[in-house]
Each structure stands twice: as C-alpha cells, then as structure tokens.
Length: 542
Image (cartoon, rainbow, N blue to C red; front, side):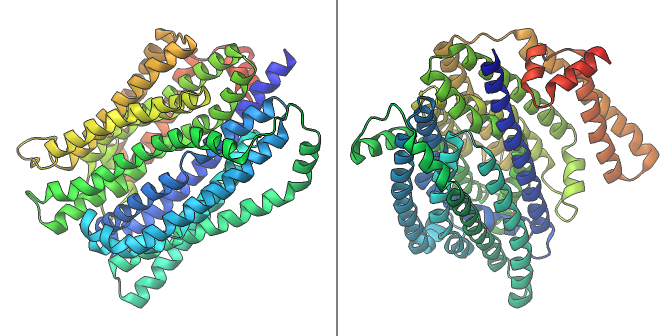
C-alpha cells in the first residue's frame, strides 16, 4: 500500500513539475509573441514569414527528433523497472549517436534547400532567411531530446522541465535583443527581423543543450554505480538495440510528423486559397493572424496538459512491464478527467472573450476574433488527444495515434481546399475561418479513433456524470456568470482592458467554486494531487 502511494505521489509530482515548467514556457512564449506582433514593422505580416519558416523547420525537426524523448523514455523505463540499468544506458548511447547523425543531416538539408522551399513550397520568398537561421537548431534539438528521454525514463522529469524553461527564457530574451538590433541596422526590414527572431531559437537550443550536457555529466558517477549493480541484463547486439529504438521512435515520430503536416497544410494552402479573392499582401496578413496570434492563444491550454502526455509514457510503460493494469486504469482515468477540466474552461472562456482578449494582448493588431473563436473549438480535442496519445504510446500501441491523426489530416486537407478559396461574404466559414474549422474537425476525428482503441485496450469505463455532465455544468455556469459580470462592469468601469482582466478573474474563481460544489474529485483523486491531502482536509473539515 505504501509502495503504491509512493508511486502515485512520484507520478503526480513529476506531472506537477512539468506542468509548472510548461506554464512558464507558454507565458514566456506569449510574451515574445506579444512583443513581435505589436512591434512596428513586424505585425501580422512578420508572423506570416516567421510562422511559415518555422513550420517547415518543425517538419524537419519532427523527422529527426520528435517522438524521441518519449521513445527513449519508454524503453529506458522498461529496463529500469526490472533493474537492467546497463541495458538502459546502452539504449541511451546508441540513441544519442543515431539521432545526432540524423539531426545533422536534416540541418544540412534545410540549410541547403532554404531557397527552393521558401519559393516553391511556401510561396513566401522572404522565409528563406528564417529557414537558414533555424537550420543548425535541428542538430542540437535532436541530441537534447535523447538526453531528456533518458532522464524521463528514470522518472527524473525535473531535467526536462528545467531545460524547457531555460530554452524559452533564452529564446524570449534573445528574440527581443536580436529584433531590436536588426530593426536599427536594417531600417525595419520585416523579413530580416523575422529571421532574427528565428535565429534566437537556434541560439536558445544551443544553450539548452549546454545545460543538459552539464547535468548529464554531474550524474555520471551515479550512472556508473547503477550499471555495476544492474540485474536482469541480457547482452544484445548494437543492431538489435537500434532496431528496438527505431521500432518505438519511428511510430512516435509519425504521430509528430502528422501533427506538423497538419500545420504545414495551412502554410501551403491558406495564402494560395485566399489569393482567389484577396491580394497577396492581404492573404499573408490573414495567414499571419491564424499562425501567429490565434495559434499562440489556442495552444495555451496544451501547456497545462502536456505534463500528463509526457509523464504517462514512462509511467504506464513501467506499470505494464510489471503487469499492474489497475494502476494504469487509475492514472489514465485521472489524467483524462483533469484534461477535460483543463480544456473545457479554456475553450468556453476564449470563445466568449475572444475580441476583448485580442484587444488586451494585441492592441496594435486586434483583428481576427471570429477566426480565433472558430479555432477555440479544437482546444478540447487537442488536449484530450495529447493525453490519450501518451497513454497509447505507453501501452505499446505505437501506430494508433499516427494512423488516427493521419485520417484527421487527410480530412483537414480536403476541407481546407474546399473552404479557404470561398470568400467569407459568400460563406461565413470560408477563407481563414475554414482552415480553423478544418483543424477542429481533424482533431475531433483523431481523438475519437484513439479513445475507441484505448477503451478496448484496457477495458476503460468512464462515468458519464463525472466526466461529461458535471464538467459541462461547471463551465456553463462559469461562462454565463463571468460574461454577464463583464458586460455589467464594462458599463461601470469604462476601461475595456481592465474589465476583461476582471471578467477572466471572475471566470477562474467561479469555475473553481463549481468544481468544489459539484464534488467532481473523489478523496483518492485529491490525494493523488500535489498538496491534495491538505486541500481535501480543508474543504471537508474546514
């Protein structure tokens, strides 16, 4: 009993550390995105150049490293669970060499092909410099991902949390410094400023790798002791170990590739489609609204939920390795519940307060509220997809997330091609709003397939009242009360920005109160949370 409680606390402690890190990362990301969007000479056009180049970079990054941390952590956790530390370290060394070489190759391809990609695929020639600036980053991210995966597999999630926070901090600071310097030197050249912002990403990944390498060196002595005390080690050839790594990392990377292709569909179809009824300049600005402001805000809830997706892979892999199905069900059920309780309020609040939020955060570029509202419908599906994808990877169902997202991506491509070329005056969901709707449909289809497979795999049974009725009741009351309070205070205070902040604060308070009143969490679930026992005792005993 004590061992199980320790496992629960360890799992949730890791989730909590990662969640705090992801929130800090997202806040810093929003800060530099606010700076860029509101910066004179950058704005929505700069976001279009920045984002189009970044999405191509993300595709190369996916091939070389996305899926690697979870793949390595899965294999490491399975070895560590049975005491085979020597086998775990061997997997780490082989993965480091393999993905280091792959990352270097991808960096070279992106650097040499920048001109062709920007002109022929993106049809945004100004993106060439951003691709060149980003290309070295792929190598450093690839080897950094292997180190993160090794420590994640040892259930030391603090390393990943710290490295992510440091990388985003460096990226934010360097983005501001480089863009300001470039704007002075180049005379506010938007394309060069966008390249400078992406160069900051490369420098940040180099600094992040430096931190991870130093951390790894500090653990060398402990790792050596573990290798000496290893049990259940079965010698395997390098080729066989490499096959094991690739057998896990390739399907996980396919999931990431599908997600990146999803974004690249927009970068390759939005500007093209909008040219049917808009000028090229106006089309780029519309794409900048979608890829810059809207994507930044819509992906915010993912930072709260990413921790579960990351922590579930090694946690479920180790539980499966020792046949502990009961622990798997409990952790999966709890993770899905928290995911719903995180995703739903974000979705409702962002839909209701879309225009005030854009005015508050982007005073120099306030357009795009309708596109933002349509995009918000994808939030609940994206966060659920994160959690369920991590669970399926931990269970060894490697191809299911990739296949399901692949189906969604095909549907998105079809919808993009159908809706984007239609002017909004003829069809309200035409133009950029059509791309936003297509993204929501894509993730809805994907998560439906994944949930069906998960339910069959572990015989998962979720109470409709607990997982659907109560959460929807809580967000409905929160939404109505907070928006009515916002409208009332707007007439009394006058300042729209201040009223928006107060309205959002009221929404948070009402939602937390509703969670307590509706008793959504059980005693055991409170105890699974960090400081949960104190919260439970306070609410129950006053």
